[in-house]
Amino acid sequence: ADYIPPAALSCGLIMVPHGKTQSNNEHLFQDHSDSALSQLSPEGAEMARRGAAEFVQQYAESMKGNLDEWVLYRTPLSRTTTTADCYVAALREAGVEVPDPIVDPLLLEINQGSWAGLSVEGLAAAGREQDAVLARAYRDASFFAKPTDGSGESKLDVLRRSADWLRVLEARHGSAKCNVLVFGHGTFQNCVELLLKCYPDKSAADIFNRNPSGGSHLRRGEVHILTPLHVHASDADAKL
Image (cartoon, rainbow, N blue to C red; front, side, top):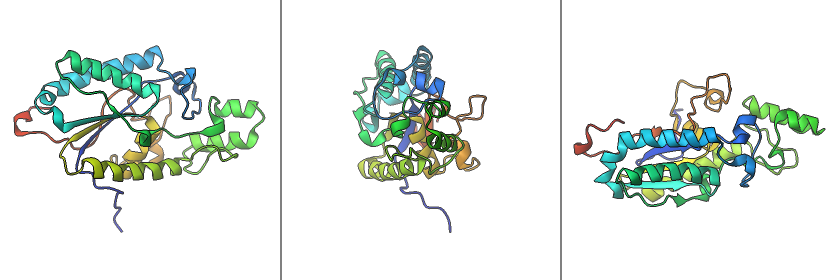
């Protein structure tokens, strides 16, 4: 049977994964806390500023006349707040008076519970051998691996949350013919991409790939268009 996504989105959807953090650079697992490790690094802040500048160049003019047709969201965590702030500041400087993004806890990233702050190697060094094996399986594309103490989520758990969020998003905005701009997290975004079949030529493992030597399609701090945007005839020159 043909695959049917959890929601057929009729709103435009853009997702921007936050810029890099120390946890990203060191391949540390994370939870839902705002630790020092989860703040944007200087490199991550520059990613967000660069992404914001590109977004303004591409969309600011079309947004000015149709601002009521754009909705912005972010998660409660500071790394998405900082990323969103770069975009909001750049848009306002360009004369687009966007409101502050709506804070939506439904967009939260995967919670890796008692693995937080540790890498695969760190778990092994702490004598948590079974957790280290599961953490390695997670990194190697397992959709079921999570902490042995039950404190965190698997990718499958986040897929379920993402499916629920897509249904909520369509219920909120599907009839409005608007564009939704989300400042969020990489793994949650990957779940949405998989559910919407944004990359039909990529395997599920490829979509979630974080191989530092290359191969990941995720561009931190930058725009990813997941569903077609709504534009007016007068915006025919907009680059979609």
